[in-house]
Length: 429
Image (cartoon, rainbow, N blue to C red; front, side):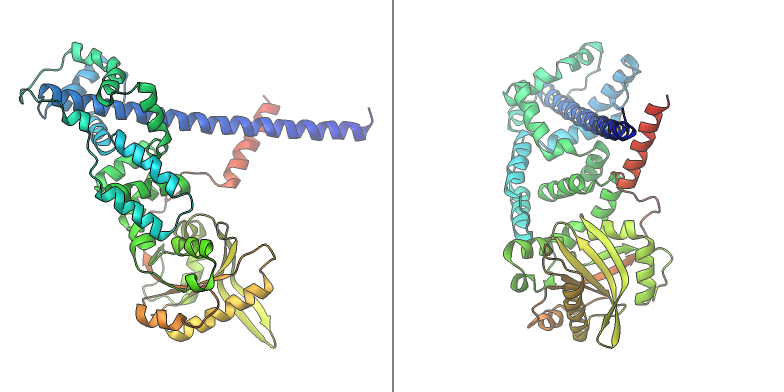
């Protein structure tokens, strides 16, 4: 065989190895995801099982404490059944009965193309609806007598599936299918505990659950987003923009949905009265956390992008690219409250980026003006008459986010590094 033929064979074999390595990596992710969903389903069944027997037998508040102790004594190798975790399992089952899971699935179907109004309507519907565990509520209590948990009821844990099937009068496989199809099954347990502790309305919990899955948030990131009230900042707050008159309907809805007000940036070390350049430098330095706050699908393009227009030099503060919008985003930072002339300056940069960077497959460039406060009436008036899409948001500088803040999903570089390491080990056992 010629060297050329040998090289082709080696190239083909390397491509084959890469494909196999990719499949193994993906299989590991699928296995972990499936294991997480099965664990959640088990916790949900356990919660239903405990609630059922509490109501059926009138067991008092010490039931969970006694059950945790009995499991610890009889199954010392089993972890995750502390009194605290069993209490969360009951809360988990009570918060997400079968009817709620089914409504979540129906809501998923309605929100394939998200918009602020559609999300608000569905969240309000979930918040206002009275979901109760009717089969559990029909069980008559026999008094509030305490019992001692023994091996006998402990052994009944193996019949949890049958008990849950009896509660909902459905085959356990059908119940499992509903659970697995809901967003509840796609969120890790630590994140569920955070949401249960936050006492969020049902619809708002649903929204955070969906965001957590779509954005790949770790439980730490989810906690921060809840604490900084992301739902209000992205959905329920009144936003100032002209998207409806400058963008076609599908894109204007999406742009308005992706816009937040205010933005909260973690800029540890920034001076209290930082100017625009200080803030820009910190945002670029901590670009990962910056893009996390911007949202899903934003890529960093440039900072202080130079444009020579005529005989003058201009520098755009920040340029991003939004993958969902297929559009460049020009960001102008102001360390002062909004002034009408800021909109004119941003409109100029949008025109320049449209002319110099925008390709034939890119949608209209969008401008985002970030200010240290604004009069919403003045800001809305200032946008009247502009043909370019512009959004105006406040921003706040926060130093509360810990340094180890990190998304649950690895970066592309980390995945490539792990895959290369895996392939190297395979080649050199």
